[in-house]
Figure (spheres, rainbow, N blue to C red):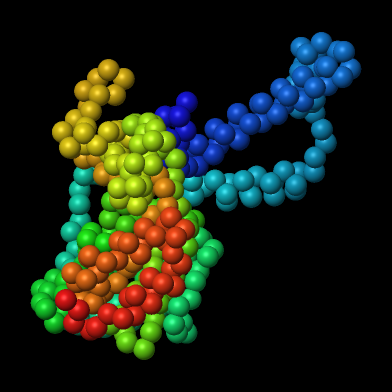
Amino acid sequence: MKKLILTIKENWIDPVWSKVIATVIIAVAGFIISSLFSLSKSLITDIPFEDVFSEAFIFFNSDIEVKLWLVILLALVYIILIIKLIILLLNEINTKLINPRKETTINFKESPRATEHSTSFFHYRMAGAFPGVRGVKWFDNPKVATKRLEILLQEPLRFSEGSREAESDPIWWFRGDSALNIENFKKIGSKKVLINFDQLKIKRIAACQGDSYYKEFVYVEVEGENQTGLYNHSSEDIQRHIETFGYSWEEYGLIKNRFGWTTPIRREDYDDGATVIRGEVRNAMGADLRIRYLTTYNFIVAAKGSPYNSRRFDQESKEYLNGILKGELQPDAFFEFLNGFKKYEQ
């Protein structure tokens, strides 16, 4: 049951499968509600359940008088609502079933040329995503925070012909001694995003714009999600992760079938490029990697050339970030720590 729920959640972000799943849910829910109503009426009135259900069936199949113009109006509304879904579904079926090779065709676009230093580039992005913000401003509404991140991390995030004065990978995320350039950002829900391989359920963010543009950053806090069920970490395992790293997470792959339906697989299978589904070995070379956080998690987003890309941040920031997650420190203490960084920090 857990695997079914997980599969539905993973495919809910697909534009076609989400509509199909919703239709099935509505149909099943309608049947369940009708059955419960019939059962309740049967218990109250002492009428056999079969008779009550038959009455309901007859009622919903009885003839009624309806004006023709009302029927035409409802039909037009119905067609308008589903025509886009029908066209999209037919296109998906044509791509994935009739001619699946089309889906493997990749159109490579030439990356634009890098023309400015990463701190300047990030400053302009901050101004566009957080206009009018001076100092620290919190965005506690996850949906609003997600929309702001979508503006901040919009394409392009990767450039060609980079140099020290104009980096090809200007925006990075930093946490302790871990850091990586952000190459991909995708919004997959009202408050859920993908940053590279990380699936993040946004809790809140803080935009920090001080007097020095090169110190600007965004603090991101992520809410923990349920496990996929692939590993079934115990509470002791998760607590050990927290004590060691400050947070707990799991890594897994997502494999697609011909219809685009995704199934989670273990990280070991992702690394091996093959998995076993219903007793059969399946090729997993095209699987997508995912990292899911099981507890709260935090990091900052800043320019590659910011002073946070330094040994001092590597060595000292983890204590602040973990302290915030444990409730031992307030984020303001961390922000004050970052404010003390020099432009060319070692």
